[in-house]
Length: 99
Image (cartoon, rainbow, N blue to C red; front, top):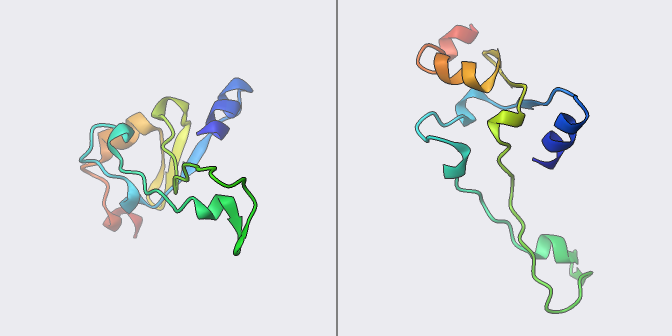
């Protein structure tokens, strides 16, 4: 998400590369995506050695959701689409289109 913000600020196009199957057309927006939370130990430790002060906790999401307004295009195996175009073509795009 933060890279998309910086890209927009500097006028640089921002593209997302994602498999078509990872796009969920049944949810109204990215706000409804459940984000997996990874163990905080991945950020507070290197191996078994603690690198953060005792008692420090952190939030460690596995990924973030970039707002569509910051995305120039979504690159899939079926083509490159603006977020607004992708939803328009959701019913017609299939894996058969890729062959």
